[in-house]
Length: 370
Image (cartoon, rainbow, N blue to C red; front, side):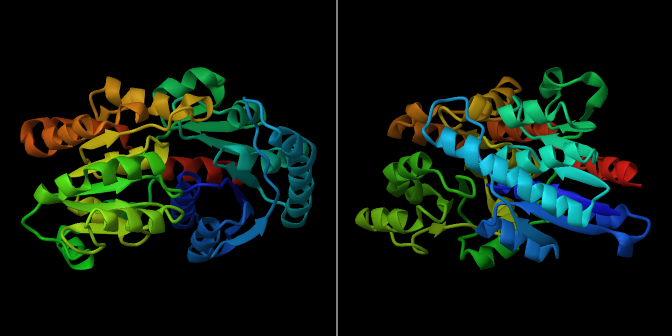
C-alpha cells in the first residue's frame, strides 16, 4: 500500500498529517507493506516532522492561489504552480501511489492536480470553517473530503463529505503539569498563561503581550511562544521593560515541539491565533482561551473559525484591532480569576475536539488504497 502525503507551509498542515500517518500504521493489516512519500515545501518544520515519522520527503514548487492582487500572482501562476505540477507528475510516476492524502491549501494543489491527471484517488482534508480557493477547486477532483466543522459541509458535494474533526497527535493530550513545572521552572503556586502565535509567530499578539507583560507577571506566569522570526526582538523588548527571559515568571521560546503537551497541561489560560490546528489543540486539552484571529486572513478563515467558537460560547474572541492594554488585561484577568466562567469555557470547547478524527481519516485512506 503506497500513500502520498501533501500539504505544508504551517504546522496546521504538517502535524495533522503526522497524526493520520501514525493511525494508518496502527490500523494497516500488513504494517511492513505501508509506504509513504511526502511531497511539498522543504521548510524546516516539514523536514523535522517527516524525519521524525520516518517518511521520505521530496520538494516541489508551490505557488499560492490568491484572491487579491499581487505581482507574485504572475510568478505563482506562470512558474511555480506549473513547475510544481510537472515535478509532482514525475514523483507520482516513480512512486505510483494507491491514494493521495491532501491536507489542503496551496501546497497540496500541484500534487492533487497531478494525481487527478493520473486518476489516482484523492482524499482531501479541510481544517477551516470556510474552505480556501485551493480546496474549493481540488474538491472537484477528490473522491472523499474530510471536514473539521459541520458548517463546512455546505461548501462541498454531500456524497463526498465525511465529518471527521481535525486530527491531533495523541501526545498533545498527554501532558503532565508536574513535568511542566520542571521543564519550564514554574512556580507551582502561580497560575500560567500560555501564548501561542502559531509556528510562524504572531507579531501583533507578541506586541500586545509585551505591552502588559509587567502587569501580568505581578500576578501570574507566562509561557510565551513567540515564533522563530520574532524571538530575538521579543527578548530585546522585554529586556527594555526590565523583564529577563527565564526570570520573574517569564518563559519565552521561539517554538515548542515535544514540550508543548506539558505547556498545555500547565496552562490556566491559552491566548492563541484562530488557526484550525491551534483551536483543535486547545479543545483537545479543554483549556479556556482568548482567540485573536488574523485580520484579513485568506478567505477570512481565521475570523470564521473564531466566530464558530464564539457563537458556541467556547472561547473569548478579541479582534486584532481591539487589543488595547486595559481591555486585553481585563479579559485575561476575568477568565483566570472567575473559576465559574473558566469552567464553562472548558466544558464548551471540548465539543470542538473529536479524538477519533485521525482514525476516521486513516480508515478512509486504507479503504481506498486497498
